[in-house]
Length: 612
Image (tube, rainbow, N blue to C red; front, side, top):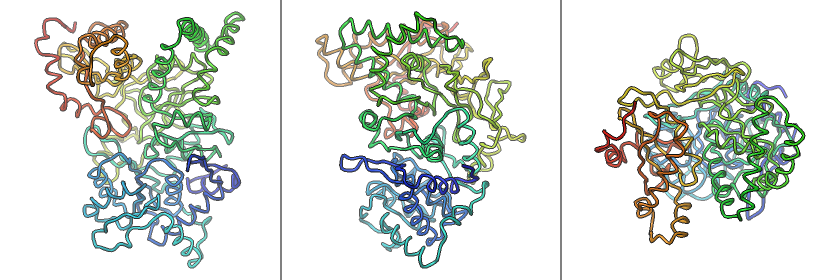
């Protein structure tokens, strides 16, 4: 297919795959599919209804919902009507949603259900441009809009009916509507997570997304025989581009996971061939696998680790572009039969490859999956870059690297190590924020990512950390937190980490332990522990985690090593404010919330932990 805009792509895909089931969701314990022509019919009626409410070029319509076919079809309807989609994370509290709706000047909003609708009713007075709320699950929201006019609230089904009627009366031509947009038209506003301040609205055009899709497809292969399971938020640029637009453009089938908690069960039901995930997902799978292996008899554990060792030998040869000899090939085949195939079955049995994005993936976890014949391809990008900048290739898979730049995208490393990007994928700018746009994009059109990285001899990029995250100890040593966090991510008894030490005389860490694993450990040893608070303060538990961390620090320089840790009794969460919707730790929030704990780590510790 050849297309210039996403709305044009939508029309072509639904024409080509009219009779194929492209979307599936679970209803009443059954996966129910939507064919291309069903999807087009729904989008057409929605687009006609949006047109009747004045949606056109320059009009912004928001969506706040978890992933579903209705999210996807609402997005396409907004775009086919000529509007711009404002993607909002459903986990955001009302005040943050109010900021985005007001800043984006959104005229309408699609809300998932009554719960999300209640947020809008609470903040409607603060959103002067908001005229309509559409309830996607067709529940009736109680309460009235600010002017008391209940007609401002409608359901998805009612909107469809209104669209069908308006389309007939106005004689609208859906195909012509899909072709009206130009490559330079604004496709979406995606608001950054706001780890350091108010979120900024990233303006991405049709051209930004179309060129990014086509360039990414030169590095990874997705076709109409592939099956994807969608669970990363569609409000995030990674899932939006790759799991939504790119997959649909190829006629791939997308199943929408019931929830993040049901992803494991859903994989066994839908047998995906490609899976997109964030590092946190792969960390959890890794830890579950290891916890399961630890419960097996000693002989099975020995076979498992032998197989992983064989896989790592083969992986090392692949990195050198060499083929294993006859004996190693035989062992690898046996390992596949005994171990790898069993692991593959746990993720549905058909995975061709995984893709990881949104944050750095631990090299140890990438090595483990690669050794088990399940490749995780890493990519790198930001919302402002649509998002892909680099994508790894199956034929040259390197753990710890995020691949070479995709075609048409230029990448260079500045004198201070910052990654600069230029190309057709760079955003139009930040909405109503010219100052921030000028700070991000220089006069030569280079976008300053704020990330630190380096290239290897094969032009594969390695990300070391965020520029602003680099810690400088009181001894003047630069320490990269991401490397330490990734080293701890693979530990059986560690769940989340926040590295400390900026301006201090040594490096330390706040550690959220793996409560499930440690509770099991305590029970096995007959330790009388009740609740997380007692768990994190028990000397034996503290000693166990400290020993694990100390061993993980062996490869690091003396000044980089974590000298002390503090165990926290509760995990970092989005609702608690410590995590962004993309599961990145908000360091500022964590540092403020646990200031007394941090001071306790460093109190009286000057003499025993020099940084030299």
